[in-house]
Amino acid sequence: MDLIIKNGTIVNSKESRQADLYIKNGKIESIKDSWLYTEIPGTEVIDAQNMLVMPGGVDVHTHLEMPFMGTYSTDDFLTGTIAAAMGGTTSIIDYAIPKKRESLKKALEKWHKKAKSKAVIDYGFHMAIVPPIDRPLEEFEFLAESGVTSIKCFLAYKSSLMASDVDLYRILEKARKHKILVCNHAENGEIIDYLTKQLLNEGKKEPIFHAYSRPPGLEEESVSRVIKLAGMTKTPVYFVHLSSKGAIKEIKRAKKDKQKVFAETCPQYTVLSEHKYFSKNFEGAKYVMSPPLRKYKHCSSIKKGIKEGVIDVIATDHCPFNFNKEKRMGLRDFTKIPNGMPGIETRMAVMFNEMVVKQGLSPNEFVRLNCSNPAKIFGLAQKGDLKEGKDADIVIWNPDLIWKIKQEHLHENVDYTPFEDYIVTGKPVTVISRGDVIVNNGEFKAEPGRGMYISRHTSKPAYS
Image (tube, rainbow, N blue to C red; front, side, top):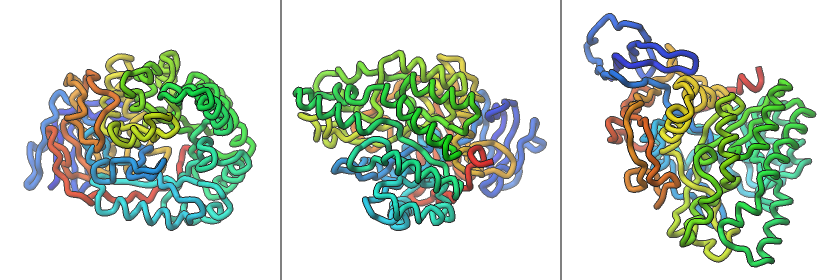
């Protein structure tokens, strides 16, 4: 059914205006300051009085049904995308991670199989490059032709996922040839490995020592190193989940030098700090992820980086594990706590509250960070903006609704939320994906498998 959204404030990344929006055949047909018809036969009308009408959120960093540390992340493509939709996200890009020596083609086929019959919103894939890299390098052309126009290098997790400096240099060279954007998990895996062994030898095994094994200076050093190698190969690079003041400083310097560098952070690095690791009854394990939470001064720097435009994208790194099951694998050893936590449903509400309500960021900047920038940087040509001809992925947002985040009211398939009892202002009331109303007043209304694979274009910001 076609739709008219009336009386709302249309919010794009560069402007806001009072207008009505007409959706036809899953696309935005027109946006008019004053709709000429009160109704069109066969068309549903939604009154968005006092609401913000924004593009659907685009989360470019998720890990659904991901094998890791002897277990799997607990959200699959059904529960994960339902939770995303309930939070106002209408597109995701998930990380496909091959086994060692597995072909990228086979890994991609596995991720397609995971998603196809389950996803309720549209989805794309990045591809992680796992050493040894000789065979993966030969498949970069295949990736680009398959619409996977970004890859990921881990500079942490020694002996499993970590790429060496030589590996990274070769990957950057090859990626540039095929116009693939290189995403980087920037930590120094060699030093982390050394510090971890040192802490364990001293009997320091509680969750806080996960953070102490990965000090913020190692993120700063790694970001600097990648930027230098990217400059030498003339390759655009993207940094995932940045968490530290030093990393922001390095990104700012590179952007000032006109290098093509893009930066992402996540809500947890703006509102949660290292003190969470001291929680009683092993509850610090809930916050074990890489990079870890930092001291609050780093949270302040991240928020400043967002306001100054140093940070380009807000994503989640959604990788949930149950506190009462998977996280307890590390009850006596922090190195056995699965790294990751949930956030796919709460991203937009937490960031609207923290950055718009508290920090004074404009709703336009909110859209830029959560919708339009991620779509542009990662080649989702039909997503991220409310413009004629684009997919009708739309969130009708109540900017005045005050509510408390409670795990029992969320849809993520995990037994906790790191934002428990966090009081936020702003919430999606209606979520539309390609013209279908999939969330209406807190009720989910779509069938499994309605989501479509997004074959992505080359990143224009990176390679134009």
